[in-house]
Image (cartoon, rainbow, N blue to C red; front, side, top):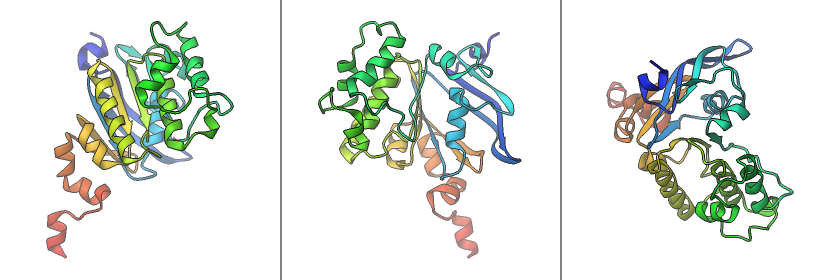
Length: 249
């Protein structure tokens, strides 16, 4: 029986550990992302979230553990091969071709899919909410709009799994709300969506399941309601004190 048949997950991380110079960046991580769901990954700065995204996308080889996309073990695969299997990723730091236009950035990705089928650069930019001239040079765009161009480029490969690293950074409240609606729509089309984001209102509103990472370890997994009410999460990440701790003081 294949791993996907066992778990039903689009993405499965099993026992992932990463060490840098003897320091554990990730310790025995188990994480699943399912088709049709938005999965959140939250935690304070330095918790290991970007390292985990690098492991998922193939930029970082784990010291231990395995990565599976669908029924295929991709632990030894590089980023390009994982992309061909339907994995798309955006970055905390923008990774766009600054000298190219919004349209050209998306067209580069479409060309890797031999034309992208029915997808067009204009259609993808419109879908993610880019309202400026598509021929405007990306380096002149506000950060929030440039992030939307990066999302449009990720969608150009028609991914089965899309991993978004702080996609709301630079967006205003209205843009964030619209992005949340888009991510739910992408999941409803049968894709797996994994999002790292510090906007807790958004995460709690759109995610089906949330993982909480702290010092390289998963300290909680659950629904938004379970995460919101978890005293360990409240103490470690949400900045509140668990009731029993408050009583002791």
